Length: 492
Image (cartoon, rainbow, N blue to C red; front, top):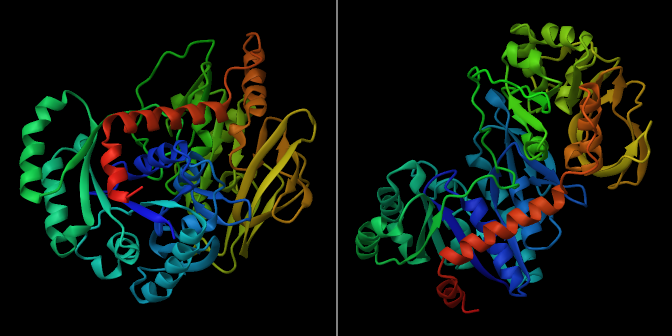
């Protein structure tokens, strides 16, 4: 049976996901068959596994760091926030309906967690387990399925991570352990994350905390950013009006509309790293006027976001810009909004049963109880040399004369035409589209040519950039954490 190490945090956003990612790569380098695990995740960033199951994107990235294929057992319970309706419940990769706070379902769901844990223990040598939020939320302790409940089941040592960038790191570390005093023996060390400065300044506080808790500090990890690794959750862009900037002619301006229920915004991560692209998230009309490309992304509540866009006049405004030769793109929920009608008779995503779309494309979308979950591969219909890979993850199915991509759904082997294009407006269900280097560069180059600029053959490989980011992260953690001490704790 696998050994295990659990990473818990004093709060959400403390860096648990990235530290698990780093540890997966560090132990994989040592030749250990290691895998990530998170019992329960709350996230709108999800990924579709090869077998057609939905898990949080963080566990997919962690699996990549471990050099293994993502699987549903790595994240058996996924909750996708859906506003006042509650959460979309994903159990072992499959949609199981909408639930409110699920205290009554804890026992049933815990059996699912245990089943996945047992499966993972048999398959791997070492599990690096990520906790959820804070383990010391006293109002939720009885419902815990992702923190101490897992540590106790596995008898797993725990490292506690504190975020110094937020301030109050010593108090948060001390308070977390003190609240969980009856389980204090599980804590075998603490880490201070996102530090900017000289460690010597911290040392008196570290010494005092080690004395108070009788727990050793195993590392101080410097702040790191600009990694090509997707955020687990938490849309990081403000809705306030951005400051006006002078746009350089050689830059292609891409503006993504920050929907209220935006999902899978990791789709646009590769665009952030293109040297000739300026990427912005904005509702500001002046910013949209300056854009070469406008994207309406995926949404967890498509009809509500559609109504919001209409209420602020953005739908008509974007349609006007399309007439002025702006390229308008809809991804997943955005594609659904582009059509004539959205029908949700079973109120799967909305309290409304029907809504009129923006009318950009001749498409009608009907929400079905069964979710489409599959990896895909294919090419542009009109330019078969532009190959693409990605994944579909949607409940609505759109009907119309699909003419954009020819794809194969890998979960079932079915070959279909997908997406629709009309002049400079197009939409698709395919997530991960901009991770395809040739497609991303083809799209950008078309706008370079329109601006009188020479096309660029190649800028970077997204796959290699992501891999180098994982390596960089692993190097940083390995350098600043007492890995030998951790190996002793694990008795490796």
